[in-house]
Image (cartoon, rainbow, N blue to C red; front, side, top):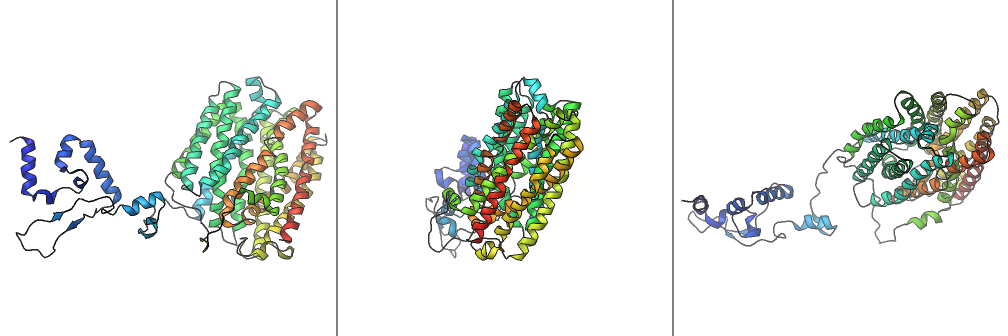
Length: 525
């Protein structure tokens, strides 16, 4: 007998068509025939069977009590709906079948509050080290690529352009796709940008790499804060946000120091390779995490979902955002030109200038952000839940609401910071510069946690991601996208770095005014 005849006889000895493999119901052929013609097809069918479930129900009709020797089971031709696949199809399409299907246990890792804070803070830290690295080696970049200060300022503008363009898009997509999957994709783009920057043959190539770096970072910055807000309790909400946002000044300052020393020992290019390697484990982990952002309960009656235009109609959100734009304008110019000012005006070697300015930013960033977080915790404990739809009176009523007090605190702290910054840039000796910058940055960074809390609490729960994303878009477009270029232009026109930085510091007055107006609007809400 031929091998095929032997297989067919064996099939008939086992009961004929009754013993056909379930997959044969779709094709009308036995599995032996399929395997002999296409082993790959048989492998694919096995994978489908394992994915659908360990037991694929057969559409069979039989008398369970039939006597021995009675006819074999009568098999009818089955459709995918008969095989129980309709709920699976409906789930993929978002149809009604999802409501009746048994809930499946989420696959992958589930991170608790501590793991979320730790991983997010490390990722945020590396993001800002990347930013600080570029700012710490600007004079070297100017020499390597033979470009002016205005062109060097455009590096930050290019980064912010990519960041601002994609931040709202990632926030919107986080309501459709798994958030950690989006973060994994974005951080992969970020790593590609780091390799591009390290190998950049021209200034235009480096400029393109910075745009991609902003695109990659946008996925993380738009999605991470709502996770922290969900994981926090009323007693530790400010501390948790403070830990996360503390990575901003610390990472930026470490970037200065890291860039300066990499340039001294090897080259600034190797610094980008190191950052890409450090971020790789976090990027890979994102593809296996199943945490999701909490959604508010669906309303009994269908209502129009709030959109971006509703944010701009929110007077509290608008005042907070425009005030933060002025704050970001000033801080962005400091971040780019601070080490260069010490190098050019106070004649410190570049690596020493990076170290000193970075040390001030790290110390005051940690201390200021921590103090702001403690103050926010005290404010939060006076209210109930900082959610607009739950306790509106806890947010605005009587001047004692969380949002009202947070904005008043930010306005007061910024007003105190301004005189110290003017002192630092008054052509005074180096010791006076250090004194003014230490106190000025301390009070400025104390506003970080309360201000970012306002963006989470002055909107409904479902708007939090979009609130932060659109706020980031506005504050960067009106802030540190423009300020490095403007500060570089002012430096070139006036011939004085201290004059340029003094004018930049004066822009903080808009933050003081706008946050006070936002507090008044919140009180009257």
